[in-house]
Image (cartoon, rainbow, N blue to C red; front, side, top):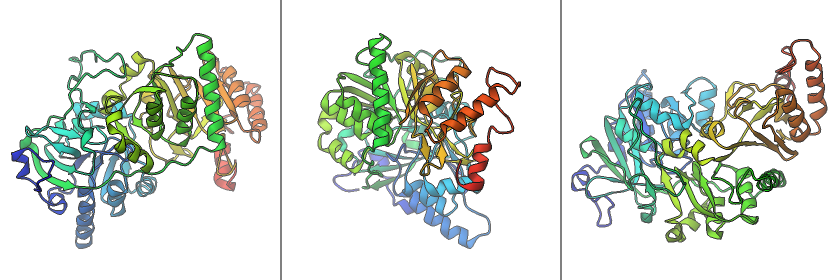
Length: 504
């Protein structure tokens, strides 16, 4: 242990070892809960050492060495990628974005369970997922009493520490020491019938502790690291993203004029990506002040909004910053300290809180059908992209659920608006607004047939609009039923045609 070690607990300082030694403590078949959420706060050293151990053992033995990996959300190549590359993951949940993982999921060599992110802790507490053997958690430091300073994400870490039989800690000195105090870890959760109301009525409220409780007797290894989070740069906003953002901002302004939104809007939840960042840039350039965010991740756009005063507070469970965003945060962390709160994901994504606060949810889609059903996870109905993430937590329970996408993909070969989605993640009952660069469809208060007109006329690309109208009109007069008109023999023909010809 060095003089600058962040491991201040005398008991735990006696358990410092190398990543290779810690990896030896993880048995084949183990259910391992790992930290990490959107490439932030994941363990950096032990997964790689474990992958090398798995590679060596699988070369020597006929029985494969594999583990189950549970996280908060996506991690990074140093975790998902290295373990998937050596075929070391048997089961993965609840969200991933690694290309090697995705390939294994889609070729059937890795099982994957796609959950709403708010539900994972409850499933673990309830025993639905089986017993967790080991938790592997990155932290920014260990205090004298053994309590843990969370790093750049909390995710499911509190639950993993509570549920696991044994714990391995990675203490990452690359994480900014001034993260200490930005976290709010709530210890008031319980299973039915013992639940109590969560006393949070504003995104700025603090209801928990700054640190995570960790029984020292459960800790079997402590590994010191000094490695940065994955921080992928965002692409500059393109014309499509800016047009989508413009439609959303125009919609917000109309809602304010009609008295259906306050001038400070309502707490914003935003998915990760270029389009959400374009929306945040648009908000920052507009007349808005003193906005709030109650979301999953803090992106570059939210840092800019906090800096300008457009946003006064942001509540999340993790960061998802570009290299420039990381530098901005580290250079100005004293400014951001009292404006950002990181919570565990069963609080950041809690349905009750999203409903109470009136969250404006903005998330992406892969495809939407004529009636507002949304597919956000599967390509052509069978191939997993990333997972549902937290979009369902907010879409069903938010004040407004907005889904966004370019109207076409693959250089115009695929329409985002289709007769029937090939997989349903968000039913028409939960989807209020659809936006593409073509326009915005407000589906509130509309019947299925009215929604079809709104979506086709406002959101479909002109190249596909005539075919959608033709399908709808023929379905309407087919005699099969006029509430939600469909031609069952043609409903998925667009997807079949793409797989056969490469164009819808």
